[in-house]
Amino acid sequence: MSAKQIDIISLDSSQSNRCEMSHKLRKELGLSERLSSLKIKCGMHTELCPLVFINEDRFCLTLPTHIREKLHLPPHDLTIQGKMSHHILHLGPTIAILTEINDKDDHVHFGTIHGFCEEMALLCEAKGILFYVFSLSGYSKDRVTGYYFFQNKWHKTTVPFPDVVHNRIHSRKREHSNQFLLVTTDLIAKNIPYFNNRYLNKWEVHQILSAADHLLPYLPESKLLESRQEFEHMLSVKKDLFVKPIYGSLGKRIFRVKEMEDRSFHLDFTTFSGELTNEYESFIQLYKTLYPRLKKEQFLLQETIQLKKYKNRTLDFRILCHKKNYQAWSVSSAVARVSGSDQIVSNLARGGELLPLKNVLEELFSKKDARNLRKILTELSLEIVQTLYTYAGGEYGEFGIDLAIDENGHPWILEVNTKPSKSNDDHTNGKIRPSAKGILNYSLFLTQFFD
Image 1: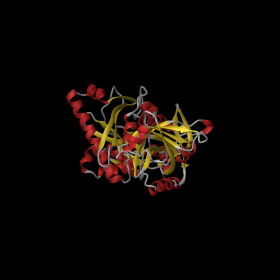
Image 2: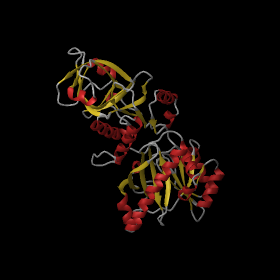
Image 3: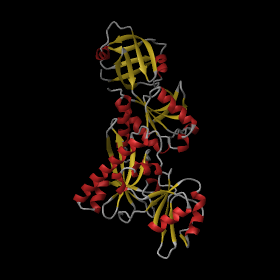
Image 4: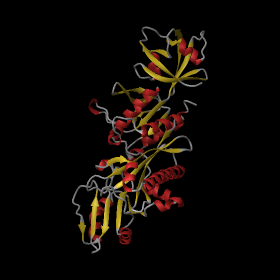
């Protein structure tokens, strides 16, 4: 049968040990008036509850404190979806986000996705869906400790095991930890789906996409930086390169190197501290300066494409794609991003600005060309996510695609993000972003709760 929103009312166990269900809800669930007990399930927990029926003109269920605690429901009245299946009343679904949590000094924060988590909480509350945030340390095989949002505040408590988990761990190191492996192994053992399994690094993405012949024309030439000679040779051929950390994000730790006509070299960079000059007389001099940083992590050499600018500022496009079901993807949002002043990247973290994609394209091209470009950018993004999803391995429900166009209107693939930015600057006017709706819709699909 279909799910219905049920008002769950908490009752002190000293007043009653029985669950009280309205006759209106009883009829909707198809239960007999003579029924004296009912199994109620939430997450992995099931409780047998003594049951009485009351006259109340709404779908409501009153739960004694001890029953609510055993089901690990929040300690306040709430509205939640419920459905009967195999003679059990299932409450849920329960959606959780896994991330790092800072809860020092009685103040909880979820980093760059804090605002996004609040949006998810409000969206779920409006639809009668349980939602919480948890960390690796809050999960064990027997119990989950998480944070739910109530009256504009996050509250820490024991929560039900989730029906689906969206992985938003920020740290690649944590994703390779034993703790992450233990948690995900237990999720698999409990048949709890989780998605956006892991970060895909830039080189991995490039290798997958470059193996697809139809995507090759849109990929800047890229190589893994493995030797000084390779760096010098590619620079001598291309004259202008980006040097990007393969595990980088938010536009951090990126170099741009140009070989000038007089054989000198110009260096630009983001977020580096220390003694870095801009002009070098020889490649050896430049490389000696960069080497202490290059040896700390793996970098990608990528040819610099002369891209179309917007008011003399770096311009690219963020296309956000979400999975709808086991096969289909859709574009949830598409925006133009322009760089801050004197910046070589357009990331919001580096002072960039979001603008409507349609408006920007129509300022740069004719209306007809702008319309065609929007269609091409959309179709290219969907081709990219289908290819990555097919060959990357693991379950993914969201990709952020960064594209750009050159002076001739030819699109280029700049980057693909498996955990696209959710910083508070990404949305305006307090509206719930399309990305939150996309994550919720795919989460609900994976739970199969409404089937």
